[in-house]
Length: 136
Picture (cartoon, rainbow, N blue to C red):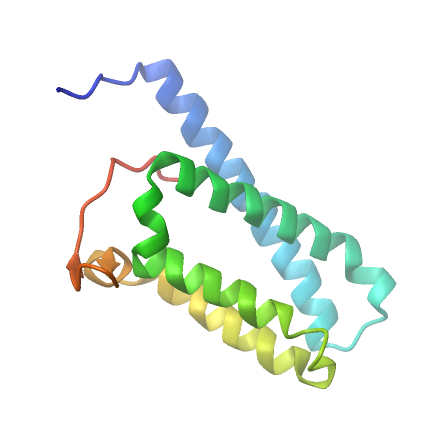
């Protein structure tokens, strides 16, 4: 079955929506990260944390709905790993800056790594192609 061509209007709505979500996510990461790295009072950066977690969850859900295989590609696996590291903020509160830096490094690998790395399937042990992505 041939894929239906997306209308230009729908493409732009999805592209701008994803770009806006990603921009808000980066704002949340910057605000929360600054607070964590500089040991600022939690109440001053907590709203940024919420923004990062909400927008990150929406972006993750967007990818899973678009193509479930995202979950078995390194970009999905590393994202889930980042969530695991973030969950360590509670039991390892003294190591928040170090954990945050590790999550940030993983984010750069996921976002800017070559497609052969990002699209590598841990199940298939090779790069797998998925549905066309809407960049943003």
